[in-house]
Image (cartoon, rainbow, N blue to C red; front, top):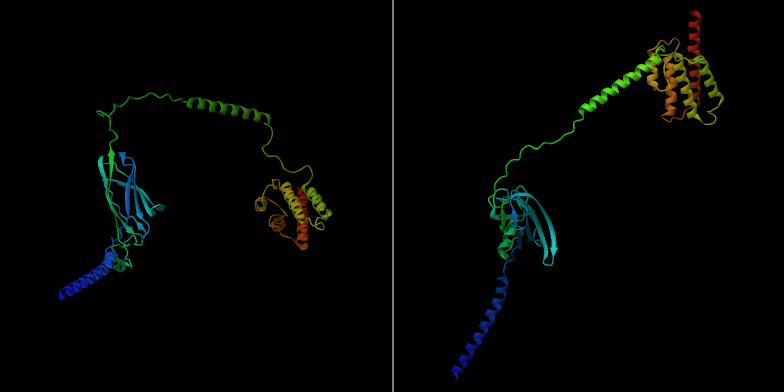
Length: 345
């Protein structure tokens, strides 16, 4: 009986010990779960090229962690980096950070290898600045085996590079070809003769024209058939008679006034005045003998007209009266001096 009791007690102790072991083993199994590992895929396209042809290295990294970047200095010897792009793509397996590197080699052929390199956390500055979360990342990595701030190792990828002379038996350089005659049409002589003929025809035409007007002087007097002051007085009186100011035609009033004075000065002192600016007209009369002409008065008439014509000034009645009075006075003064000088002669 005592033996049976002892056996039952031992059985109960074994059952209790087994349940405790299972209870302790369950959380232990959860902690032993495989650490998170960054998924990195690397491939080249195409996998077989000729020397000097471009190859694209594609690196895909899971984008569910911190963003990554290429190192500032990337050694891919014997390949050279031509350029690279970065993008984020999504497929059935999740979101990926994709790096595409365009590489090429000009030095070696055969079974080559694109060396591996490390992708760096994007939060790291290009000059290697310190990361504020470095300590936290180290602690996390010790706990669950994955550190988002750590570098990611990209594996090396094989590439077969063939020679451009592959498949050619006994490749030898071709002999240099001799010079090839190229016919070039030279029209320089014809152009010279054409220009010479044109010059002769032009000279002949000018000679005939000069003979036709041989006796004609180069400059003719610009004075009109009627005295200049009579024409100017008639036009100024017509401006007054048309009563333009009462009709609100101030712009036309000053345009006609300015043209009348310009035409008079040109006819009186024999130069073309209608196509000149006000300053050019003043310079012209200043360089000529103009007895009795008040340049200040001329400038005032022209300036008033320019303000209305070009600056769109709304003139006052005093300004309009002053301008027409100055115009009459200008013509009257120069005419009187001209008549006196003619009578004395």
